[in-house]
Amino acid sequence: MRYEPVPFLILSGPPGVGKTTVSWEIFDQVVDRGGRPALVDLDLLGACWPVPADDPHNERLKALNLESVWQNFQRAGARCLVAAGVIENRDGLQMYGNAIPGAVPTLCRLTAADHELRSRIVGRGRERGDGIEKLHRRAIQLAHELEQNDCADFWVDTNDRSISDVAGLVRAGAGRWPRQVSAKPA
Image (cartoon, rainbow, N blue to C red; front, side, top):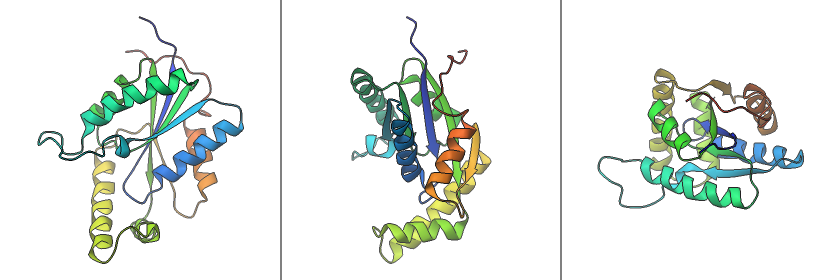
């Protein structure tokens, strides 16, 4: 069966880098220009406990939920999808892409300096005391892991940039996303 191409923009990066915030801004920009986007936070699609021992980040559950959510979004009129989540490798990217028939995924990795990640984590107000330091250490570790295992199509530095500017850079880096796309070869 042949599917219409679905522009699928994924923002990845460590905690505090701005994935969710920038995704919302991109969503709003596309809506303001008459587009028909949908938005999903991949972490929330996998917020379920307990997790399987062989899938500690619930990636399979996230992909299954993404498939169902996209079907509902599409029936509601959405024609493109922006997602926020941590994509650690090509297998994860492929799993999410396969969840959406016709998906043409573009992966952007957002980056920020270590001190900026800490400041943003503190600014959330959810963590207290040791929790902030633990999440900050994890964010730094994950940022370095993502850099070493980079599977992104491109990356955008979020340091000293407004949310709107970062969203504009992401959309430009993704070819003026979500302009009409052709299906990528299998």
